[in-house]
Image (cartoon, rainbow, N blue to C red; front, side, top):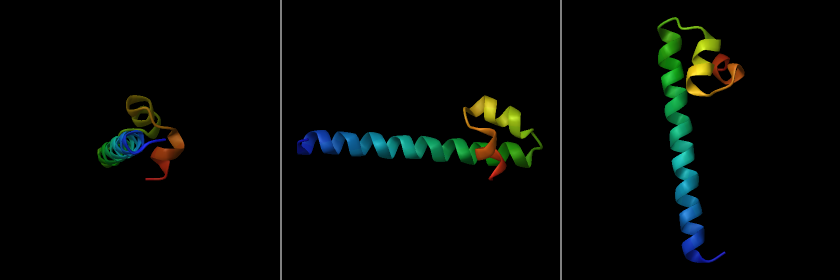
Length: 54
């Protein structure tokens, strides 16, 4: 893997991590509003276990 490919893969990885963090932040806000864990998981594409862990 060359430098260019490495940098592109690193950028993609960081973007995926940022998107996952945004989903978890949104899930936490929904939990505060009283939305069920299963509804949050379904709406945001998370697992129920991920939502329960918040």
